Length: 166
Ligand SMILES: [Mg+2]
Image (cartoon, rainbow, N blue to C red; front, side, top):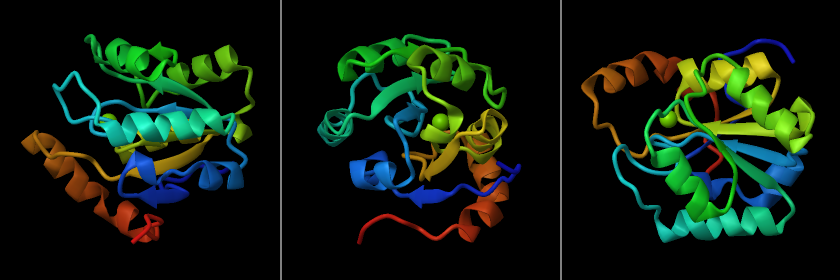
């Protein structure tokens, strides 16, 4: 897989990543970012839509693994809510955490995808690890510095057609 900052798929929310879409890409393992991908910063709960979506994905035989840079309790809390394993302090854009999840799940990179909201951490980590990148719109812009970074990422975001339904 060649290095690119362009995600393969762009959706509005993780719940747009249907089992059909994932199966179509050959994905057996979905690696999930936490902050602003499955929940806004600071919250310790997940929306029911996210929990239901994760159940549908798992029922389709696709494993889910949280790989988060978060150093706090959120990765563990969400992993336990979703009944999935997790890695925190993953150090993305380093591919270390993604590779650790691949090894733990016994899935080759071409059959794995990373769903995340950030080009400069998630997309780079996905590329370095050789997994598919699925870009999710960030849930909330709470941090002004992040808002600035998203602005600089816009050319990469626009390049990819939005695959969300509706
Ligand atoms: Mg994030």
